[in-house]
Image 1 (cartoon, one colour):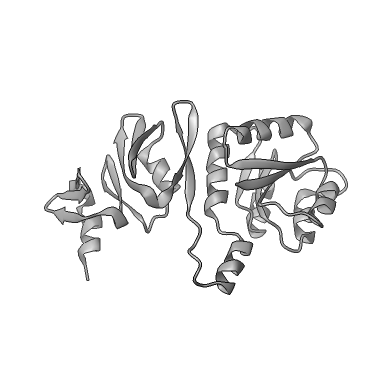
Image 2: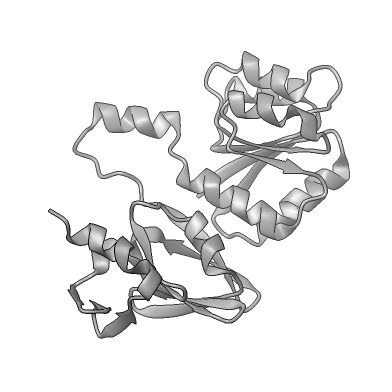
Amino acid sequence: MTRYLIIDDEFMAHEIIKGYCDMLPSLQLIKNCYDALEAFEYLKTNSVDLIFLDLNMPKLKGFEFLRVLAKPPKVIVTTAYAEYALEGYELDIVDYLLKPFSFERFLKAVNKAIETPSTKSESIQTSTPSAPPPEQRIFLQSNKKHTQVIVNQIRYIEAAGNYCKIFVSGEMIMTRSKISDLLSQLPSADFLQVHKSFAVAVKHIQTIEGNRIFIGEHTIPIGKYYKANVNKLLRP
């Protein structure tokens, strides 16, 4: 469960963000703050995993607030001002959403936040090196709902017109998305496009024979222009 905080001086902004988050069952609202000083006082004695942060607020601006936090959590900026984007990335924010933003764009930012390891989790791994790394997860929209998927359980992806079929261990999920957009959300070292309509998870490849890849009972074709990508896997 990802525990989040909204910091914005506009009530409507809280309603929009909460409405989007309510469609994602793994997000839990912890507190609504209407200025950065209120959030600063709250975080002195409490912790959250993610902050949705507006920039132009009274008393203390958004980036000023970030600079005074000793150990800031993951941050997604939500603002109407594009000119501060560079400064935001210098402060290691996860993403920068320009108001008004669509749910699709919001979902992409949340997926990035879930995938990005936090400083806290890194320190835990350092102190207990035997602990397994956290599983990466993304949300996939299918049939008016959003399904959370463990990335390493995805076997392969097949493009089908304006949709993609994602074959996960034991099931298939159909989502309205381009294959290129899906691949941009997945770790490039783990997934390989092998055809204009197919991408595979490298770890799930069982055999490669001629222009075909075998994953379980599935056969995936290798496209002429993607053969070089596959050949790189075969080099010692």
